[in-house]
Image (tube, rainbow, N blue to C red; front, side, top):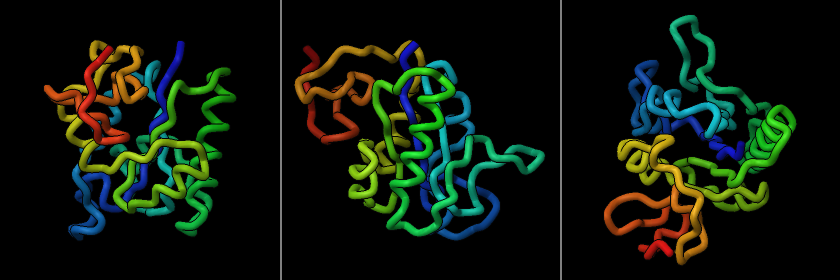
Length: 165
């Protein structure tokens, strides 16, 4: 079964009660990400931040691929996540997404990922991103329908408003 790889930055992306700093606590509820179907979504943290989402026993909610601490090497964490999930699932993802607030699009491109800002991803997540909303059809911007949200089918990647074919 095909899947979508979601790799996350942490600071400014995930909401946290661990520290009350605006540059640390973001807009995405980690519980909503955790609830995404594991058969359809592989989830990974690629940030070295210690404020990644944790369970009640202080374990990460998502697999950590964060050994490269330098922001200029974030793409290496993305590649490690991609290689890990490709190996354990024995297939490549249909698309790999990097969700961040750093505007580090160059890091995503180096790893052959699509960059999505956390605000846009949060809106999509809040609009019920689940198995029933997945359709692998391609729209006029050639991105998967899954990456579109709202009545005008705004694309999370290119921000175009697309008419689905």
